[in-house]
Length: 274
Image 1 (cartoon, rainbow, N blue to C red):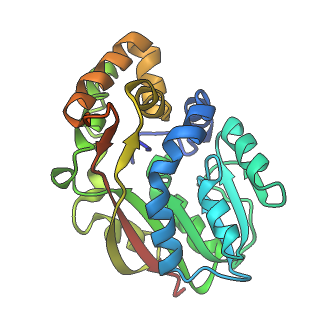
Image 2 (cartoon, rainbow, N blue to C red):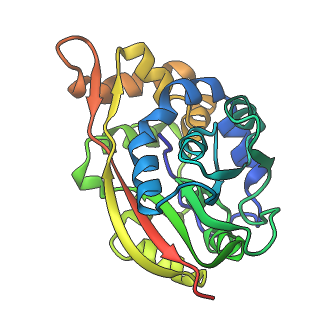
């Protein structure tokens, strides 16, 4: 599951190179273990968007392509963009006929009004300028089309908060003006961001998406596959990362040795009325 760093200022105009490298370091573990933890949110968004035959859908920050795979299964004509070439390789193996491109969210290589639906599953927050990224999403969405932005749910309502917090001591101190991982989880923040991009907020909804792992080793690989976790391992070492995750996971161990952690995602549905 993506650990979100919503740094929205004092960053370069383009963030793809940095994010692409970090998220591509453990692409296989992400695709095989962690990406599926988001599946309930993918399905909830596509249900809300009424994705079906001939829906033109773009997943902005498509990663290894699991969300696009589900959309294609519903009949959608799917496209995707991501900053990680390694994750895109996995996506292409899953969807050989999809239009998948490498690039930045702040400068989408698609024509105006190209899509009925644009989704961003824990992706717009990673843009150097999320407002610019959402403006681009609006630009490529047809009039009346919908843009979905997903972030973490309220931290006080989910057990996964402990796993997000476990990475903080392993990373360099954030800049004084940097937003935390739950900055967009605050009521009203997603709507504010969408409105700043010229979108019309329609509805905010939460999706329960518990994380499940059969054993500790699998949990450590899955949790360690995010770009933020990969950075933590580079800074503090793999041993420290595994130890931090093991400690944070301990309260959620089940009698059979598996792990189950309650997690929630918050999604904004907005429409393009411009």
